[in-house]
Length: 394
Image: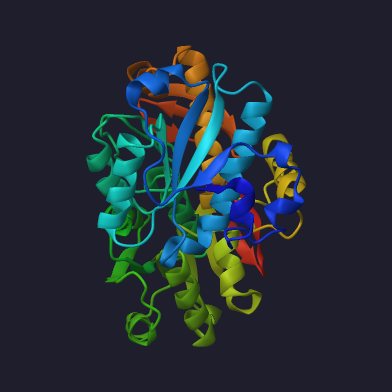
């Protein structure tokens, strides 16, 4: 078992080692690869801590979001615990890797629920992992899924709070059609459930905006040779390439796209793009690159100013940049605190009932959930070197 301070020396943080921070500022946290001390339902009722298993990806294409995601969860837990915890119970974070073979991730969540006595599972990972974990958890404990996803999650016991295509992609497509006269669209995404279902919705939005899809393809996760994809894009002559590639795959594609000279005359619209990915792409490769999201680090608001200040104080000025995916882990715990306070219990059925219709506050500001669907202010931004410039708010 590793403590939060130990994690800082194992490469999970890009900022100063957590050992340099005041230990009292951090919540209890552990990194686990196997079963914990167990104890079952009886010890869960007796504990004065609320054990949250946070499944964050530390390897593969989405692994670049791991450090910021972990930091954001630690920050939220520290803030909540400073105010007395959730219904008097201090949050104890248990970190597990959501990367690698699906069978391994399923094994980890089964150990967490069956032997490590967790009260809540929280996930910041790709939708393919969410589908596997919800089957393994089987509603035994509540499962909060935090990042952008394809929408439509209705599995009993699962609460999804991220952006969905209807509110994220549709206004951005309309804006590009209107302001940039974009008509011809090429869709490229990673080969799993989020891009599949997102593209299905996006095609309708493009048609409604008067455009047409001139090409579509799905790329295996981990693909870093994009020459044949770029050849097909050149041949299709699109006005916009809509990119649903994930993590490091988006980094390598966007680098190759710009280095091939395509960024000078073809726009790019990305759906899982944030400051972490932008840093990997590099300032010289971000020309004509747009992104729609419910969160940008550059957005000035009271809620985000407070979040950014707290993040810098806890992790220092060289900590991993915090973008939409990382920040969603902060939102997940803020959401949990809100529904528990409203329900006045941590009993799963009551939490799930309250979670279907609730308003909570996070780094994005106010997020409203109605009938299980999250609504928030959405922003369209254009890459400006290694940062974003906000263009519109929807």
